[in-house]
Length: 112
Length: 112
Image 1: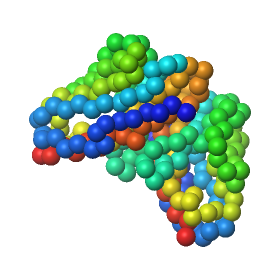
Image 2: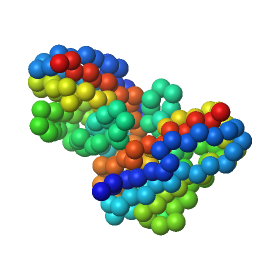
Image 3: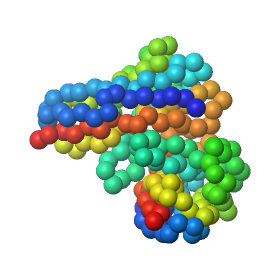
Image 4: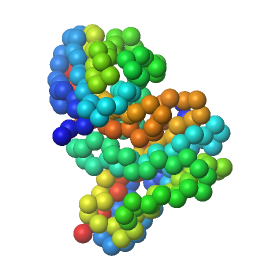
């Protein structure tokens, strides 16, 4: 089972400010890295799936980068809004591995 | 329309009882999963079925038995419930070969 770690565990950010946080994963036998957004009382929703070193993906004000050689990914939120408050999960999948290994998440709280 | 649905949403039961949680997806996916969210909030894979065949079976007590009557359904039956089974259980689905998984709303199981 891959050991996926996320930091920080939680963060608070003022509305309008930008923030970022990290997901680290074993770089050997890497296949794919997922980011999910999980709002309270809802289901996790997929944000990005990344596979290539140097990949950068963007959805609105949220973007992510991937470094497969050193085993980390950053998620960025630009100009945070209260609706960005959620737990952001990352999950890694290895080559020839059918399952995702999830980190514990980073909980973001945006203060108005 | 609900993509991945689970019933019940809440389940409170006594130790030693047998219970089932049902999952249905209307996305036309051929792969379904059961996850358990542990006390540290990690999502841990329990089982996965592809085209009604078991492909992932993690180290889970054999009191837990998944059943997939067709590609759209994956039910989880739990025998002789124990206190430690209390958790939130999430169902998910995906298309084989595609990485993005779609999650259900979760079932909060409380064993008294």
